[in-house]
Length: 138
Image 1 (cartoon, rainbow, N blue to C red):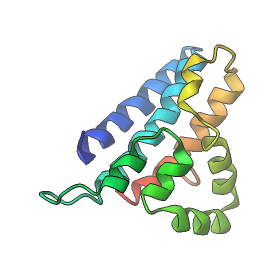
Image 2: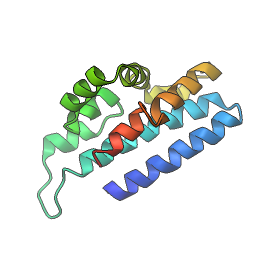
Image 3: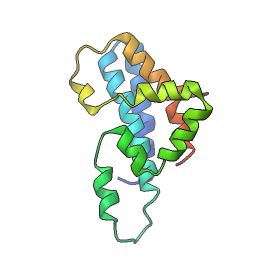
Image 4: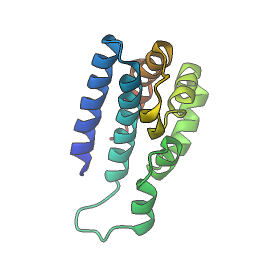
């Protein structure tokens, strides 16, 4: 996948998460919302790759993970994340919610309405959400 495809997939997944949340399908909403963040982080990583360059093996290997904290580091955004957390306490709280997401959530049947709602808002909030912040680096 390329950067544009990952960006498009992120937009689709967050939209689907919103639809599922509205339909009281909390488990799917939770999983897809977190997956949208993963896709945007991978798009940020893809931005680092120049056409016709031989791929950097470490960058490629480090990109094949679902762990959001590792993807932030691979995307080169760790310092910017720390700065944003210092500047915006609400963002810091939102990141704390988002970073707990795991691809293993697709197997959890006990995701509550509150958990799904909290994750969705932590990701999408216009003022301090993780997704609007990440989009600055695409």
